[in-house]
Each structure stands twice: as C-alpha cells, then as structure tokens.
Length: 383
Ligand SMILES: Cc1ncc(COP(=O)(O)O)c(C=O)c1O
Image 1: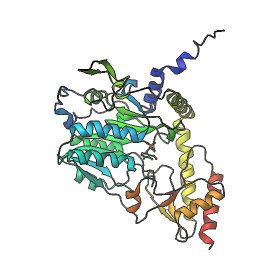
Image 2: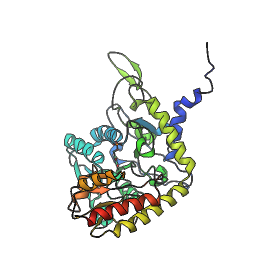
Image 3: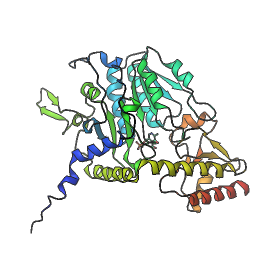
Image 4: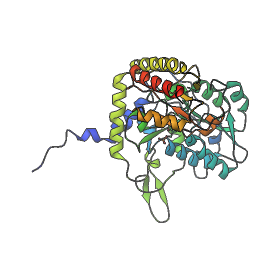
C-alpha cells in the first residue's frame, strides 16, 4: 500500500527551516535601513587563492547567511578556527568582556595561542554594567575582533551591542555577538546591530538540544575557509584537489541534524506567534517582581543589578553555599541553577565562585516567584 506524502514534503524543506531561522534574526519591527559596515580590515588581506574583498554590502539575515551547527559553542569555535586562524597575526587583539560564557572565551584563547594574538577584557562596574569608556580605550589599530555576549547568562546584563559594534567598526574590527541569552527574550535584528556574526542555540528557545545557528555575513562566508571537511560541503572531489560548495553548505560537512532543525523551526514559529510585545511585557514584569521579592529576603546579595537586564536573578546568602540552596530549592520542586554557570570570570569579578541563579521565561508566573521568594526567605532565616 502506498501513501501520498506530498503534503508533508514542504515541512521538511531545508530552505523553509533556514528562512525561519533567518526571520528570527531580522525582526521586521526594527529600524529601517542599516548603516553600511566598514570593510573589515583583517579581510582586506588576501588569503592564498582567495581574492581580497573589494566591497562590502550590508544585508539582512537571508536564509543563505544561516549556517546550522550544534549550537552557540560550535558556532563560536567555527568562527575562531576559520577567521581566527586565518586572519589573526601575532600582536593582533581580540576584545572580550568579563561577562562572557566560557564558550566565548576558550575558543578565542585557543586561536590566540595558535596565532600569537592577545585577548583584552572589558570590565564591568558594581551593577554588572559594561564600562564603555574602558571598552573604547581598548579599541585601537590592533583590534581585529570583538566578541560580545548579547546578555550575560550569570548576571543578566544586556550589553549595548549596537553602540559597541559601531565603535568596533570604527576601528575596522570584526564583531561576533553571542545571542544565546537573548534570542528567546527579545527581538534581534542583525542588520541594526551591524555585527558580522551572530550565534545562538536552539535549546534556549525551546527547540531540541544539538541544533543552533551561526549568522555570518555573506561576504565573509565567501572568504572564510571551510572548517570541517566531508560530504555535503564539496562541489567536486579528486585525490588531487577538492572544490567547495557555495556557502552555507561549505560550512555544513556531513549529514545535517534534520530532525533537530525541524524542531528548531517549530520552536521559532511558536515564539514568533506569541509576539515580542507580549513576551517582553511578561518577562519585564516578572523580572521587576522577582527582583523586589528577592531583595526582601534578609542578607540576600543580588549579583548583577544592571538597568537593562534579561530575567536572571543571581544571588548568594551568607548562611548557605549556592549548591546547598540549590538542593533545598530542588526539594521544594523549584528548579534553579547553582554553580559558576560556565562564566567564572564574571563571578570572580564579584569575589564569588558560584551563585544561585533562577532564570525567568515566558512560562513562569508571579506565583512561581512567590514560591521561590518564600522558600529562599525560609532558607535565609533558618539555621
Ligand atoms: C551566553 C551563553 N553563551 C554560550 C552558551 C553556550 O551554549 P551551548 O552550550 O548551547 O553551546 C550559553 C549557554 O548557556 C550561554 O548562556
């Protein structure tokens, strides 16, 4: 017996999935026309066999600018190992912030070690806000790459990435934005940010684990060398020479995670259907309410009080370790993260190794926060 499956075929078309991922990064409500990014200086140098860029045109995130990978970590590694390895020279500088997740530190350390480049770090103030003056003073002719988290996963700080990208561009640097903590919380428009790369993980937006995306401007994809070799990324193969597929396939060696990509598509459609105004309003209310309720807890120290935050409420108590608090909350059925959150430098800045970190999302309610605050209050006042 045969079945007519033509109706389901479009659901599995890769182009649809790429388009929906691109849509997430070009929110229609955002500003009209982008400013043209400068020609990235590192790419003005010719690579062997690859012509130098003669002109750069700013573009929206179009489907072909989306590269599917396992997630944020893999995407940053791809950029570090292609752009980093090929374009960085001894003494070149990579600028990161103290708020970065380890995924946006370690790949650059590896690239720096191989190339002789140097990492410079932007500090934050007591609230956990980026010190923009310090950032500006780190920028200079040696700055080749600036890689910034869009929002800190440990403190919640949202970085002024448009402003920071514009400053980096004035020095001809390439800019990568780690959007792991923003894609599910706010609209993102890679054009108005003006960045060269934007990365995110599907599991942060309710998709399966093991799928994520790298937005890389088309002109950069053309000059970036391939990363992994294998099937799918080639045009022709002989034992003497191999030629590459057009990007983005050039960066997607091997059988893709098709099932996860279908899950990602469903997750993005779900999120976009809820609508950003509703998401922003809901999460903002939860954050304000949660901040106020936690600050009522005696001796609770809230780490990260930036004026512009995503819904992350990192805290410590003097009478219990974060791990103990995490376990006690778990017994009440309250799931939080306790530990260093893969962002050790950001916590060390506040003299800490670990915090308790409830994070708020669209499915939370104020009664969840009441239960959390009451439980934390009880822990803080019991011996
Ligand atoms: C800001 C930030 N960057 C990078 C990552 C790493 O993401 P993944 O483990 O999905 O690659 C995370 C994950 O928590 C994150 O919050």
